[in-house]
Amino acid sequence: MHPSDRRFFIVHLQKTAGTTLRDRFRHSLPETAIYPNRTDGTDKRISVISLSHLLSRWDVRRDEIRLVAGHFPLSTIELLDAEFVTLSVLRSPLDRTLSYLRHQRKLNTVDRERPLEEIYADPFRFNGLIRNHMTRMFGIGATEMKAGDGVLTNIEDSDALLERAKLGVASLDAFGLQPHFEEFWQSLAHRFGLDATACTSSNTTELEPATASLEQRILEDNTLDTSLFEFAENLYNERASGE
Image (cartoon, rainbow, N blue to C red; front, side, top):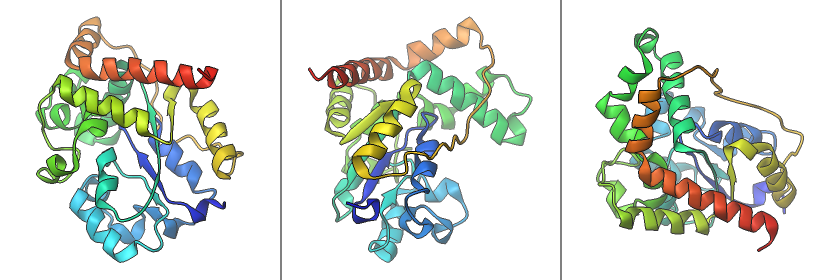
């Protein structure tokens, strides 16, 4: 099947190579087939985060959309009347969070001179896009996230949420780990007829040292994500070895 004969849904986690994955799809799909594109609004804070905005645009563009690539939880597919190939890339919570903080400093003028610790402590970013972000993206239910219009819904950390997230990861049609992204991409391209020669790398940040205290704080605040990533690593290795 040609890629345009399927629909793909990327559970696009912050700073795990999701933008790179989306941009490589652009070598195989026209811009009209991708959500979001220019027709979906110029404010990316809305088009890639707001569940209600996605649903309203789906009503308009359903027939042409073949790739949904915003920051939408896995349960979003329950609200879209179509079948999707579900994909994602996971990353260790420490590396993911540090990359997110560096990206925020690069992206926002007001953050340029701020230490990473100060950006990390911002309540909006911490509760919405840092604290156990991956677990929320895979574990939050469709009804739950409607209240907060998407992934920014502030739900409590719990063992039950983690278990739902593990089931979510296991249900994906394909997933990769950020340190092995190229391996994942080649496997995906071969399996679904995508352009294997696509080599785009998007939204990367330069490594820089972080204080030991910040690293420790990140680990303490993201114990659910640590458990989820360990689960994903084990599952990835089991599938790679054919067990």
